[in-house]
Amino acid sequence: MVKNIVLIICDTLRQDFVSYYGGFAYTPNIDALAKDGITFTNFLPASFPTGPFRKDLLTGRFTFTYHAWRGNWQERDCLITDVLNTAGLITTLIGDTMTVGTYDSHFRYVDFIRGQGPVSLYPVEIELPLPADENKLRTPRERLQILMEQWVRWRGEEDRFAPQVFKRAHQWLENFGRKAKRFFLMIDSFDPHEPWNPPRYYIERYDLNYEGEELFEPAYAPSNYASEREIKHMKAMYAGEITMVDRWVGYLLEGLKYMDLWDDTVVIFTSDHGFYHGEHGFIGKVELDRNGTIIKRWPLYDTITRVPLIIRIPGGPKGKIYDTLCQTPDLTATICDLAGINIPNTCQGFSLLPLINNEKESIRDLTVTSHTYVTDKECRCPTSIRTKEWLYIYGGDEWKHELYNLLNDPFQDDDIFVTNQDIAKEFHRRYIDWLRKVECPEVSVNLRSEFNNKAKEDLPYAKVI
Image (cartoon, rainbow, N blue to C red; front, side):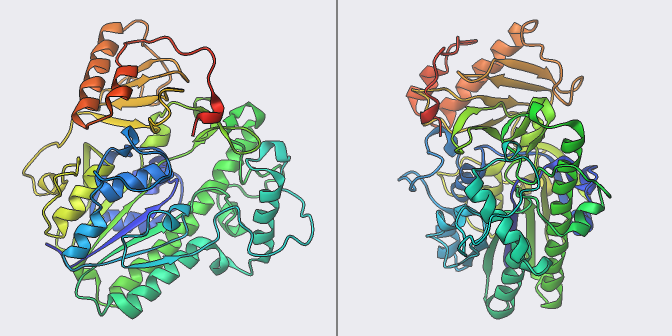
């Protein structure tokens, strides 16, 4: 049992951009945390994207099977915050992700930094020039103008939202954390989610003297609207945002040491999903129309599902790397285990501590990652079923069925579904069995029970949420 737990979630952080994982983004503070702790290379979200991931984390369940993207908690949901509160930990949530204002009711202390959203804090006074053709940018002009106005009002790096989040978390530790007997602090930073607008010196580290259009908030669409050069710069802006976030992660970790909390505190660092930067012909996470409505949900390849997971335990292993398969509900179970609390019976995850303590070699041999199923009657979304060797994509109504051998094809470039029907059929069987084990509503199980089903011809995209 440990005294305190700090959980840091950085939204939309691809594992393959972090330098400790072999990426090209400069992340010295995240790397240092990894060297001082344990790193997982096959940690995948269960429910996709932002809101559903956090529902999984707070309940320890595969909520994509029965929860909407938004919406209230349900009777079957036993929240980890309630369990931790009962055990005497001060539960605290500090962040600027839009979900902070939605799923925060069971934390004892909440600090929501409003900023990363469509609401302007100021009246729009003048129309500011955009850094790219608005047809290459994600949101309607009104929101783009709000983002641009925020950008020009910032006086320096500390005015940006990630610095604000980590500074406020540091302040909470100063004023309350140091005095608490035990605490659970969840820091939920929307960065490095787009818009990618860090100070220019972060971007220039990766793409000096670029003079083209800047897709700082790119349209969620097939990638053919952007040139290779524009995509390269888009990745530079994203990497720059990651490096800025890393700097402020370091500020928080340094504070834990100066406040004499380091030796009593577990630090967990992770993300909810990645982002397509032209891979597989996509930019974004789903396809959106110009009003921001989802018109198609894309398959979830490794690019967007493999995220970092680092756990630093005082006195625990250092620099150890695990390739075991694990998912969001497993992190929930691990937090309970670290806190010395019985894992609730409603939790569908498995603690990672037996792995860390060399008591087990694996906790699961299959992962499932998906968009939410609440619209199944209208439109079945794609779902990814993965082992270390294979990725099977159940296409539903929005995509074809696909199969990849990850040992021979780690980037999923060669779909072998047609020539390996026996393997795909076995994965489909395991998928349906798995849905029943996690108590997926029978209506969704039945709608997905046919192997290689024919997709609907007319899809009611207005209902795809």
